[in-house]
Image (tube, rainbow, N blue to C red; front, side, top):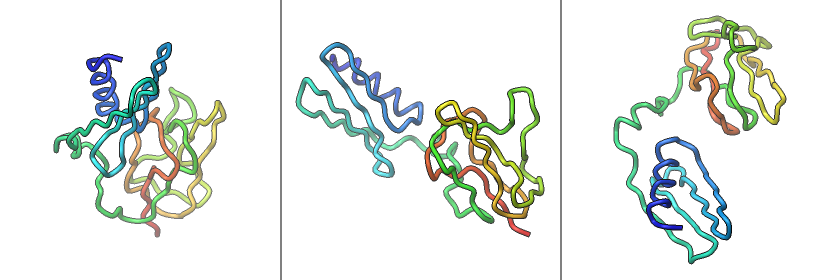
Amino acid sequence: MDLRKLKTLIDLVESSGIAELEIQDNEERVRITRAVGAGSHSAAASTAPVVSVAIPAPAAPVIAALPNPEEPEGHLVKSPMVGTFYRAASPGSKAFVEVGDTVQEGDALCIIEAMKLMNEIDSEYDGEIVNVYVENGQPVQYGERLFAIRTT
């Protein structure tokens, strides 16, 4: 695979925020992974020796767009699975919860679609929604924070 294609793929991974990209084209295979917390990426091609490409950490504006790294106020609700996050039961419906809403234990917070199954995520706490960390329709990873709930 030529270097321009490889650079384009690395840029794609860097700009999209995805953790891993694997592409196979005939005999060539490239896997690009984002090293979490290390600020670098690596690429490996199966038809050639392993190639490591160090890329500087994203610029400050990109970091500023990420969720606040400070400790959240209240309890975190984390994703119990990998899937797609939805704030409402259907595209035209009202969101289950908004920032400032009061929830009771067992109230629906969101849906995570995994393998064509819709999994309703319920609150484990009584309290107020103080933060929503994920945008509607975005992919989520296991353990990724979804909501912060200030308990009452």
